[in-house]
Length: 356
Ligand code: NAD
Image (cartoon, rainbow, N blue to C red; front, side, top):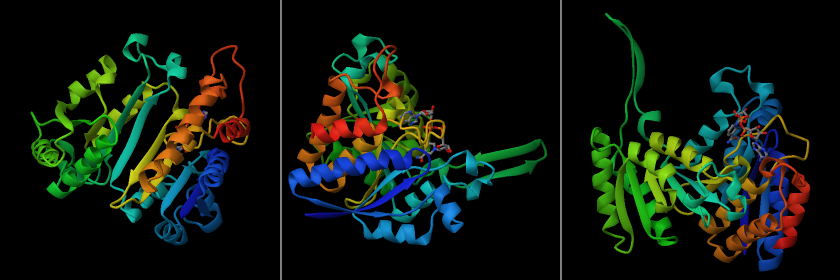
């Protein structure tokens, strides 16, 4: 079968990690009899240089015509002097809005082979970790009414947290559907002891749970969830939460896994469409030096195979290949311990392609 993928290499190490990921997908295509049809489009700093805009209309058009988007990273010091609204990173917000990406999936997977990179005690993470944070991406306080006003007592600023039943219901469904494909546990995180919006959140998530009798649901207040993530991370399977709580908890959960070079992510729209990208940025300090770890992007492609294309066996094959390269002791600089041999971006790609 044919799958159309809009490819946005972006800036810094983006093109390097995307190049290796395309090789991995081509190998999967050959082995399993699929064709991945890539259309490269600019976004970010390189798009500003080429077209004057960080997100050209043509890029959005190609993304909309594709089955999925695979993105490297955008931004870098060359564009840091630009005012906020003209910066390369605005392309990410633009893509989320234009493509209706309302659900952000951030798996926090600790490969057993990299257990040393985890800052927690070994007994807390023995056997590895596999949590996914499902974050609502287009609502809540980041998009609510906001202002800074002059009052008799000085300046006052406010940001409004607001959620509709529809927004909570659709993100909850993403989380429960995901739990059905995993360990069938959902933890909904809110602050229902204080916030009205959280009380609505909790009620709607509980209603959605009734459609998934096989999934166990529990509710945590966000302060407790933040604590439990470092106290007993293995109790979690799928965590579903609002935009702001998800922003914070997904970073916390990912740090438990050690290296930013290993962390994939997905942003999903209604239906199967999604945009897949590594959690890391464009790493300008190592760009062009063959030092970047391509695994986060390759694992993002595995998520694309699983969640957008429904190619579960192929997704497992990519993840298993990454695991076997780690098991064989190969490490890029970001995950190497002192004294370990270091491989570059291309060699890492070669090894994963060979392992498939
Ligand atoms: P960063 O993630 O780019 O880099 C942080 C550190 O991690 C650096 O030392 C870098 O060398 C290292 N690192 C990151 N990815 C790596 C990889 N794959 N392999 C090995 N080492 C890796 O974050 P930053 O330095 O804060 O940001 C750099 C630029 O990226 C900025 O312009 C920022 O705005 C942008 N950014 C983009 C995205 C995105 O495109 N989604 C996300 C975050 C930051």
